[in-house]
Length: 55
Image 1: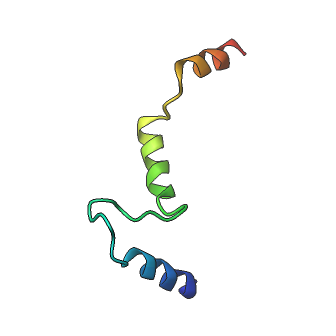
Image 2 (image 1 turned 60 degrees about the horizontal axis):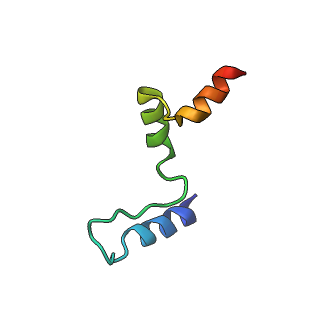
Image 3 (image 1 turned 90 degrees about the vertical axis):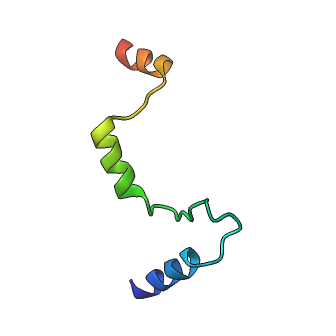
């Protein structure tokens, strides 16, 4: 939607307090994270994994 794109462009082009800190929007990095998880797997705490394996 064009209106949403204009808002995102406005937010991401705003001056940042810290130029080294990326501007992130909710859901914006989902596809990157999904691809990363598919490639590398998902980190699960050992205690949680043990409970899953016990099922």
